[in-house]
Length: 455
Image 1 (cartoon, helix red, strand yellow):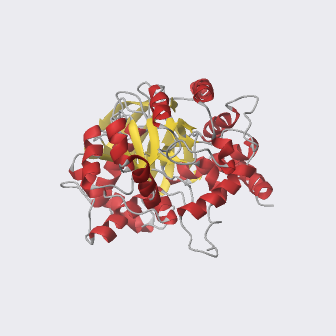
Image 2 (image 1 turned 90 degrees about the vertical axis):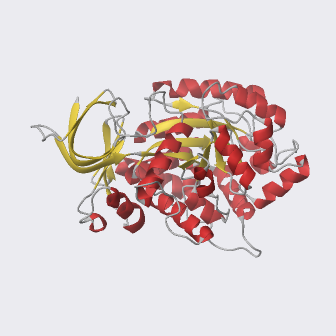
Image 3 (image 1 turned 90 degrees about the horizontal axis):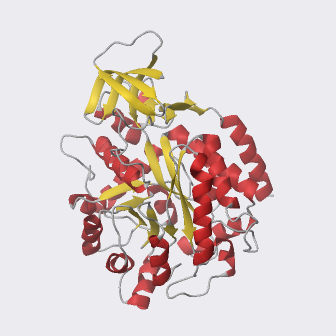
């Protein structure tokens, strides 16, 4: 049992002052407002709920910053993908574990408490399954265990290179499964995660490019009520190729032919029409936005305001992990909308600041997309909720003389880092004074892996 007292806490009911939390068995067992701290209480100034990163490719942390040199022709997502494939061909299981652990430590240090790992690096470099079909998934689980981050593992089904069941390319051979081997992998992942606290396993058909309609039906049928995540409409070329194949745009096709519902997360969905936006909102699915990666790859900008106006939900992810930062993802989410709308404070809620509005929609959408258990009300600090929260450093220059919503605005839009002080996941404090408890140990493994990969 742990007692934590904070001067300001963002709770389900809004900001509350002089709050005492009783943390037991990974959850908030009690919450008292307007009380003084007691002897033995851990004291903090500001507590806010911790976000989830709903979309991550952890292995790509190893190429962060290494794809920023232009080639002989114009660079785009597709040329970047070839560089990513070259990295994927080289990475062994030990290196994957080390790189993923580093990514997860960095996520925790910036205020994420859970990750949705969209995991498709399954087999050996020749494309042959390891003796344990879940060898690479086990490395993701080990990295999550070492870091303490909450894990929603999303093993990816990948079978084709483009629409219509086209044969996969040699560079994709590490990603491939049959329906039978994928079902075996999924069962193995469920076993691997059983020892982790509150782990979730979902399914992830990679994209409409990578699966046939029949395979999509089969894979999503394995989900039950667990999360279903899929890349969709990230690139203009993808939209054009889908139109040529089916006569419909990717999101349009998906809404017409798949049982898209609240347990689905449509990742990116960048290139959509007004009708598609309305259809997504009606389905109850979450749109998974990754603003830093989408900007890095030149994807485009999803129309957030239109979705929210129709009652839709969004969450954020770190995707390629090129720059891991809660504040960067949330600020770029809003700023990209300002650039396209030529307006200010686009993501908004009545009586709340923009920072508070973005934080709340990302908390709710992320919790939904990551399949957190029934009774979890969208990533909030409240009695009965998981004890996943963040303390902010009230002495940081950006936060001086700020209170309530202005604290979130300052963190998201006006800070230069080092705002996060402590982070708790399931009641365990994993970050203190901005540093993860296993930072040095994890960094040593990461350095070794990077030297091997880039020698």
